[in-house]
Length: 509
Image (tube, rainbow, N blue to C red; front, side, top):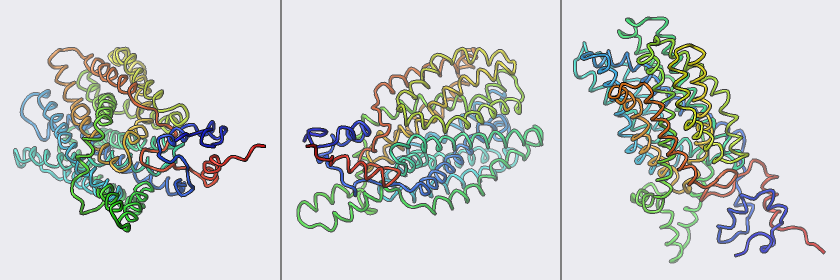
């Protein structure tokens, strides 16, 4: 069916809303009705973004704590062997949590597509807080022997399993609440939460190191950082339980109810189409994801792999690199990273609107190109050892990373349709994070030990950036467009009326 001037649509309106009319071309019936459009409530959107970002902040606070206490954790739970062996054992335990993330992503993601985003996000928040809090209660190796590392690994697995459903759900939650023209802006707050979590973790560990000293930290001080997770988890759970389900999921539920009320063969056929939304439905969602969304899954895995290697290299591994390879003291290295992350927090919410205005692909290309070109010079500067050189090198890497951080949380949910978005994104994201992200500190440490060169982080990052450039080139631009499988979402009733009016132009005589 013709769209545009051939269908009687106002050419001027097409110029004002080009992405919308491209989306209408893919619809069987391009005529847009007022009931098709979701008008968002800014107060509700901000509340949803706050709750999702807080959960993400807590997730990365928990993982950041472990990264920044890696040397101390190695001494407390793996006292035998050399310092390198202790550090490798600590990073191996860090990586263990990522092995179960795809399982958690599959479990919670498919449930989130069937039961709703809100319930699952509340569950993952509760499990993450419990796992982190319990790590702070584990007796040391000297007290209970091998049971100490066994319990540490068990609760790291709990963390990893719950985290598997966190990012996919939180980014889906924000994307489905936000209006189409501001999805990048609101999505950037999810990664603002990531940086806030890391800043909170790095700041807390730096304060504890300076206040207690190494001996007290190894004896009992490290526990304080983990016990903070309990109260934070309760606050986050409260905020998430107060939210409503996303408008996109509510529309799917309404469609399911309408279909169930219909009779005849057509009604039964449609009911089967929405059967994945039923709490008692068979597990069909997983098969649909791999059979229908495999291309988007591969693209998601490649994007997230490149993004996570650069992410974990800078925000998780760098303090260890500064301490272990360049012999900075623990507090000094953390303070440098802390300053870098605070600077990124000041920038990131400006990156999101840029992706709304110019597109996701230009921003992602800029970030990947930055890592490709600047990684080697940045690490050469860091190796100089002087404070200005280290800050400059970290800043170069940080500016490249913030282009990815501020854009990815809006770009990834748009790869998948609404009915399988949570599950598809959780599976793709966590497979990639498990294989590439969580292993980054372990792989870099092992390669430095095997090759003897401290430029390994730069080479590893350059390889990730090359993969990322190819992936970004293969993706479609989704800025300012409705999410696949969802109606257009606008910020005001006037904008909705304009979209409808655009299809019925004034007659010309």
